[in-house]
Image 1 (cartoon, helix red, strand yellow):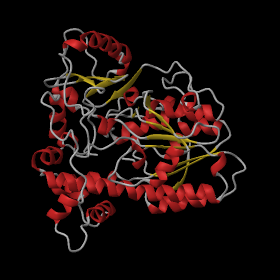
Image 2: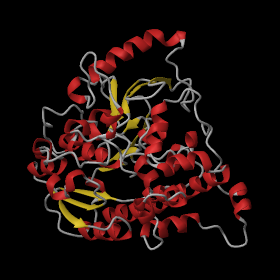
Image 3: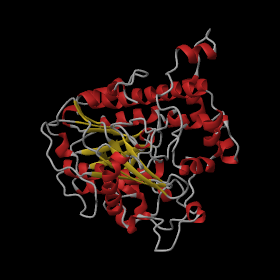
Image 4: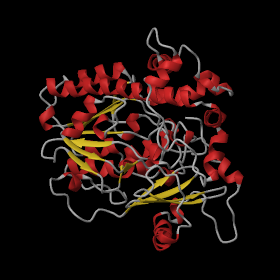
Length: 447
């Protein structure tokens, strides 16, 4: 969703400026393609499964993860002498606050007010180095389109109240120019459907089981017409442009206060949105639209205008070690992520890890080179292999392809190594089987 990445259906000049001044990682993945566990990983450098957190439901977790919080992003940077400030969206588990992660809160707004509060922060005295997190909400408002269109449960109806700011922003993004019919607008103006719009014939049944938990997701897939999907894509692009404008105000604050030349800027996201691919919206699935995220890093002394499409990185695992390295610290020894700084040099160092893990409440995945290997916890077609070089739209399950059998054996062994029992929340002893009850114990909330 960046014009710098070739998306012709939106303009993101602020984000493009970060990409021009630094490195854009084309192969960055979140640790878990849903808000709360992904954000836990972003600010601790740990897998959500380390604390049995696989979705937005944390009711089964009874105490704060003290060990993870001790070396969280804010506390790590404070130990290096940084002032650490946080504003905007939290979506943390267990009612955790920015203070629990080592930050002071400078803004509870996550829209225009956050941009203004960040500018005020940047206007202050900065004798000491600082880490500022500006956590904007959008384009998250797109989530409310299908919720409102198919509201069924009390929570869905609550989230669809017209007085909510999310709905007002969404309606502004969906607005059709005066004098143009909806049919004409969708046909002539809205982005076209993606090339991978259709449902893969061998899709994992776990995807449909996941959608059935939140009926609006299933209904959107079954009932949205092509015009509806194109309107969804139009609104998603406008909401992305909305946050790009807010980000530009923060970047302008850096420039206006003569801080831009000695500040490293990182942009990333907790997950993506399916945006009509495979007739889906929302997230949770391992498809690239949901699990692959933007990651831009720019700053003094770093290579400029680089597009890294070779190294598979994890924002959830690698961001905390990267910032620790920026501050001249050694990251906590029990973190599995690595500093990205060697990849940001004009001549990147060799030896980056081969495999990046991704987890969800419906399964586990590793990404290695051009291959994605997945195992889902229930349903048919639970083992999936995708060769992104040959199938970038993820329309085929290559598990049974004769040409891929040697690589499949290697990936199976690597998967077992990456997801040890300690990281498998549904690990079974010999003879046991994962049950629907064990899956429901960790059932996802709709957001």
